[in-house]
Length: 193
Image (tube, rainbow, N blue to C red; front, side):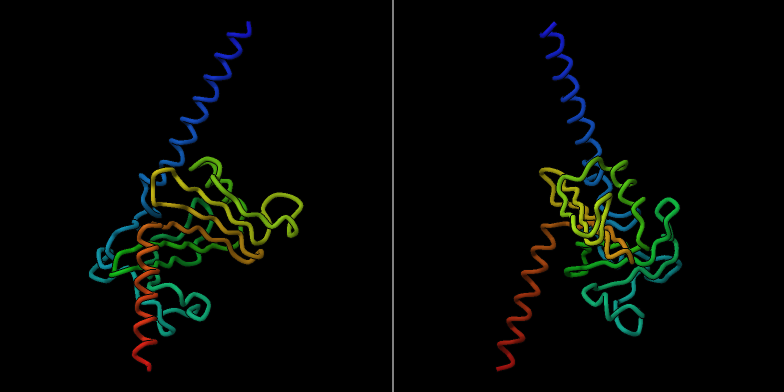
């Protein structure tokens, strides 16, 4: 009897681990959000002879003042929804025209978190603001899906009841981008003297 219980518990744990890892490994397979892929060139996205992304400038983006850290804004209207939830905007960060981060903004909605759980399993890490909410997802909560042995991560942020965002990141490219920007800032500072 004890041996049977042990076998059943072990089998259950193995199946749970396999199912969970299959869900989270889907992130690696997808390699981005819908048709926008990490590690791809920004100029590969063309529709009807026009680039799908425009440079993120005050002229091209009315929200530039709060989203200026991004390099490009997705300007094609074909990615409008995640299931039934309307997408507000999509931004990307690049290094040498290669996409290393994709950020999708939408109005505040906890259903997105539930859909992410269904698609990728439970988050591997979370940072929650327990003071903001005694139940469910609260303002400032962040959830991370980080597959093992992969540089790809997914982050869901629930921001102050106004918006939520999903961020797909290639961590390796991000690190090299940060290093490159620091070198550029250092060179600029040195040239200033």
